[in-house]
Image (cartoon, rainbow, N blue to C red; front, side):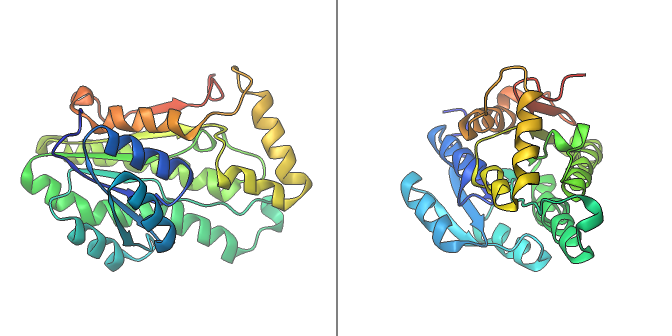
Length: 244
């Protein structure tokens, strides 16, 4: 029960990694709020873990502020919401890549901007940003996604430096090939989606897909006081995918 008495907001928590993180934080004692554009999905997960749901479009700063206000004194922010438009960059439209940047990077910035002042005022906070190994090594067919997730890592380090004096830590997790609806959705993009998955899988030392619960375990650690002296780090949960 490392998180007993803590309030946590998990963005993009209606499915996949976000839902697994919400469940893990709840199991460790946190009062969990799930923020998602898919309110019905968020409410379903919330009901399963005795948590709360709030509609949240992470690309909207005012919506982020409203979600944080609904939680109250927020202790833990998990910036998980994300998406991708698979395709070689020369075929991706500006609208498509901007959407990826707005959600994956802009969403992290919006929610952090909404949550950080209260954390600093209270002298405590844990920010965990879900990046990706694509942000560290690049991913064919996901140029904008790779750029956004690299930005998340840089942003995390900057916030760690700025907020440390206030008792707030900021860390990132870089999942690799995790069996989520987002990853499996790559197959909808045809041959290129299949190739992305197979290329990444062949680079994974453990030779298998990761599970959302394995990412959730890392998030729970970084959200807890067991990680009180850890900040500005990026933890790979990728079966060795990102090793150099």
